[in-house]
Length: 346
Figure 1 (cartoon, rainbow, N blue to C red):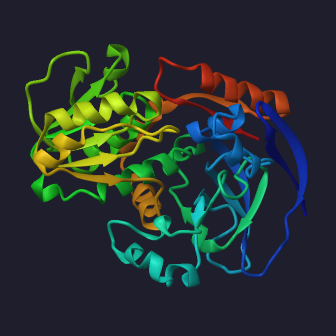
Figure 2 (figure 1 turned 180 degrees about the vertical axis):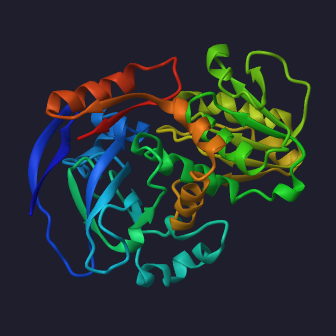
């Protein structure tokens, strides 16, 4: 069985390849239905990473946010037509058993942190293809009444859930969330749907974006802040990480927990003196594991949760040619003011 797969071969160049989808007795065949572009995909597309890194990446099929439906399952785990979320990261039992990965057994971490784990659109080809095969453990069924353009946000939401697993909510009194972009919003959605009595303040730079955080207090980062927070989450990344994290350090109470989620390609100088004086704990969060996807899939049964996710769908675009893919990439690249994504579907 053959399928088209689209790969970034050099900065701003995407080419179509033909791939052979082998029908194996232990793997599920999935038709990829909806895909969303991540900032990491954009960095590879633009070549906005270290040249030495990119030399080992290209050609690379982007996209690690995708959902589809089952075409065939020889393992009988799923039924034909089942709607499924595609899990982009995987590792082996042998890899997890290595001494260097022993802390991955902790429930607040998980297999996604194992060294040598693979991740779609980073260490191996992503989901910008029409058909895909994988082990059933890399698929999570979701409510077939949920539209795919909403379910495609599952990966982002799963990472948000992974971040919440790093927090002891029995000790949280005041929580600060830095970032008024899409990552900040999906963390906010998970917070208000899982812990609806939290005292949350969202810090951002654009009043229009902050209006989306309707169930939280909001504040511009340019305004003075005289409050203290015991738990602070950073969802900024990029060139603004330094300012965001140091602002968090300034308003963190003694013994506070800082959760960092934003990715930056450059080293960020931090106020280590204040970190030491306040006895702060800093935790890094990236990616998620199967349990996080299962949590998100169960939340899709909650109408209020679905309604909170729905505004993230800026458009749904039928992909019939390379030009259609380019358009979606540039639409997301040029979107600086609205929280959401331009979804792709075949």
